[in-house]
Image 1 (cartoon, rainbow, N blue to C red):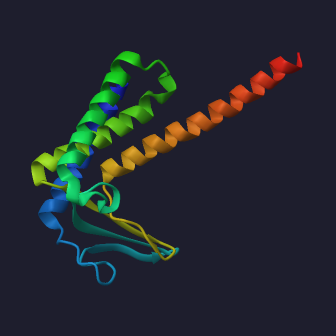
Image 2 (spheres, helix red, strand yellow):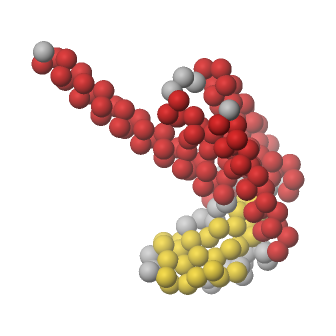
Amino acid sequence: MKAFWISFFIVGIDLISKSLAFTYLPKAIFTVYPYGGFPVFKNFLGIQFSLNYVANKGAIGGLFADFQEYLLGFRLLLISALIIYLIFFHTDKKLRIPLALIVGGAIGNIIDYFLYGHVVDMLHFVLWGYDYPVFNIADSAITVGIAWIFIHSLLSNASNSKSSRKVNLL
């Protein structure tokens, strides 16, 4: 049940932030920082951050923008499978939170497609000279969830290999 509320919270915060971005931020013009957006801070320890409205018709960084219908179908299929897995088959309670983050983020981005015809991105960072693609809260939740699962997997595998070595020594 906690996983549901985490997903619900992510969707809510994501939709509110995107509605505010859609309403108040000017469209991004990619010529010079902050690209027509609202600069929050510039060169704080080598980091720049601005709020920019970007209509992302593709996936990460605009990939597959020419295949919106296929991308939507893939997203719907993937999120349906993940929800079914989370409800009926998932047994590792340690992964409920990261899976809930992924589900919430995915639902937030899918809702965008129906509300705006594209995903609304608004968070833009330049870290030590590297200009990251503009993203949103849903993207952040998905990224944190995937990283959490990856780290959990690495730690579990390391723990399992240590315990199997002990068994082999005995």
